[in-house]
Amino acid sequence: MTHSPFDADVAIIGYGPSGVVAANALGQYGISAIALEREVDIYPRARAVTVHEWTMRCLQSLGLDEEVKKDTDVSRALRWITYDGQELMRMNSLPGNLGHEQAYAIYQPLLEETLRKGVERYEQVSVRYGNEVTAVDQDAEGVTVTMRSLGSGETSTIRTKYALACDGGSSFTRKYLDVPLEGETLPVRWIIIDAKVKRWWPNRHILTFWSDTERPVVDIALSRGNHRWEMPLKADETDADFDSADKVWPLLEAFGVTHEDVDLHQWAFYNHNVRFAKDWRVGRVFLVGDAAHLMPPWAGAGMQSGMRDSFNLAWKLREVIQGRLPSGLLDSYQPEREPNVRFYTDLSVQMGRLVKQEMSPEEMAAMAPKPGELPPMLLPPFYVDGWFSATPTPESAVGKMIPQPRVGDPRGVIDLLDAHLGNGFVLLGDGIDPAEVLTVEQKAGWDSLLARYIAVRQPDQGTAGPDELIDIEGTLLEWMRGHGVRVIAVRPDKFVAASDSAGLDVPTSTVAGEPAPATK
Ligand SMILES: Cc1cc2nc3c(=O)[nH]c(=O)nc-3n(C[C@H](O)[C@H](O)[C@H](O)COP(=O)(O)OP(=O)(O)OC[C@H]3O[C@@H](n4cnc5c(N)ncnc54)[C@H](O)[C@@H]3O)c2cc1C
Image 1 (cartoon, rainbow, N blue to C red):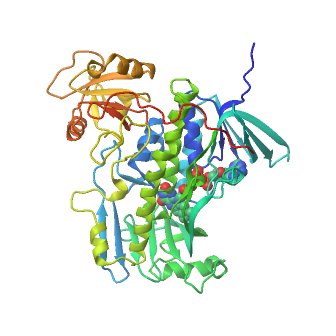
Image 2: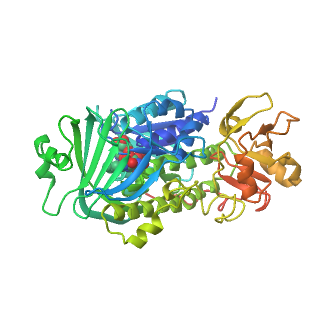
Image 3: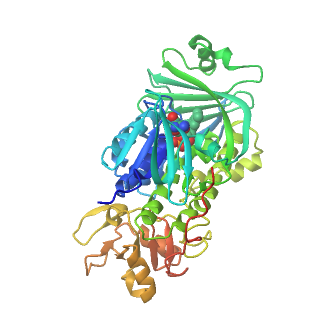
């Protein structure tokens, strides 16, 4: 009997939102993983406040959306308002087209708890709490991760094929690998105050940005009866000025919140960052989530970006580890994810300017969505570069996430599209069997990726075979026709990899083979 030199396929360093999504996705794909987490308990501070529909679709793919939704509230609207009651801008929620509501208010510790429970479904994924990673070394074959048990003080190692550094903004791994973290930490200190609601006050559920040059306040209903205020300290204020509840209360009382409204739960201080790690891949180690990028909280996209990073990497690791695609596929991680994260970071910076009243009326008008238009933070997900058969353009289907309507199958079962598509590659044809338009080589390529071929039909048509779906809402076919495509090849993350108009070859990986590992 031969023994594998590896303890698992993947080491996950850090088990916050990014790490736990990676663990769920790898678990679902049958990839073995060991997660290493310094803390024993979930970080108790509720940092992230929002989950948008793209992220909820990822959680759906992990079989966790319904469970997560139990601890969320649907977000209804955002408004920017001055203390004297002038509404500068308002964005009402519109129906989403990715299969879920556009936005949900969350309570981060509960979300993380549900995601951690999700990992327990997978025998081949284990979590070692109370272990601090102290070295991440690699060679041509794999990665050796060294950890110290915070309980016993003992040091041990594990050997894996790849490692995901999900160890947060002050990432040990990033520093150990000497990857620069470029950008800036903004000088203004913010206090975030979390409270438990005792009685409802007018419009509590509307996420309100109190816009002001001196004391702008973000006023957010979290789920499960929690509420949050975030505000900057003034130039002459320090953390020490707010070292007791009695000193924090006046900040809330200043805009009418009383002891009858809430119980103060906890508060913390932090600075905003606009920072990006230079390289998100060093050999067999990938920086994920806050370890790779940090943005201000205004667009509510920090945690979600980390979860999407994990989701982006997990299926690629599956394809590479299971031998269907070359490891160069993994080089598409940063080209896909970084521009996308930069998009939300820029948006977040602009939203911050609006809150601080630093925007001219012209800039505000340009930023406000026109009637019926989606606000930028809810634009359909897109990538501008990466593992695609052609470079994505603003008009192309390639590089975009497909919508998720409810569709029917030949046996009359109506469900969300992804429930029918599963987590593999799927080619969809508008009224035709997509396999019919492929060359022999193209078909062989998609076959080798275990792709499925599905004809999508209009509801006024019948089905003729088992691999067909009925687009009862018409939105999928409308989307395809709007992008001028009849056949699309959809990746496991529901982004379009190839189309008949851009070419239906399986995309080639930029680099075939491992890049030279960093010597350390
Ligand atoms: C005030 C505030 C508001 C925010 N609001 C939002 C929002 O509305 N929406 C949003 O999407 N995001 C928001 N964010 C950002 C969000 O909280 C973070 O982006 C998210 O938590 C990052 O997840 P992560 O898993 O990458 O890192 P983290 O959550 O930092 O997790 C890293 C984990 O790694 C562990 N770890 C670190 N070093 C080691 C080591 N050497 N060995 C073992 N384990 C280690 C840590 O203990 C931790 O559990 C907000 C952040 C703040 C501060």
